[in-house]
Image (cartoon, rainbow, N blue to C red; front, side):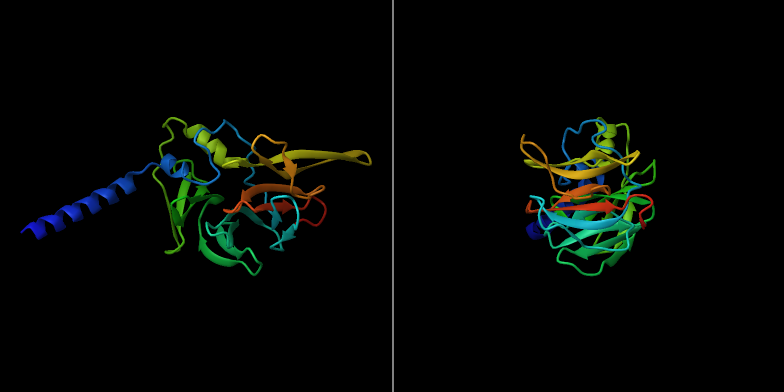
Length: 243
């Protein structure tokens, strides 16, 4: 009899735990995503959902930059927790690319996907996504099941606007390392060329440039889990054969 009661109590605890997980808010999930902060500043960085190009990888000191893709139209890179792969979007398709190089492989189609938010620190199977859906702007992709679903969303909770502004922006904070995007410009003949570059800042030190766009937009940076590499998207300027 005691064994039966113990089994029932264990089952009840499991059900209660499952129910609690199911009721966890979207903002609680976001607070466990590496790179996001618990107290985001409003409009941190600019929205950049329309920027796409090729995926680049560079050491955190700005050396050994190399392109991992060609053909363009990639956006929103995020490292896997083990650092062996990068996940990117191409249109509404989630792709996986080995950090060491190789062809992208399709994971799943995510209708309405605009940006990869990232992995939660305690869950290497699920990726949070930003969706083009005002009623349910946050989605979750299970890599093992190759399936996606929207999360229940309540935009009235405290901090919701700031959190959404942060994930739509480009600045990310990983402990003592901060990634940011800065505007650049130069005069060429009778016109001004403007573009963006990716910078890395350690603690309160001066940010240093790690991308080398030199006229090409460099955006959407992400830091590897070991802090050694930065991934970003480089877009060719208009009129230069951009894809």
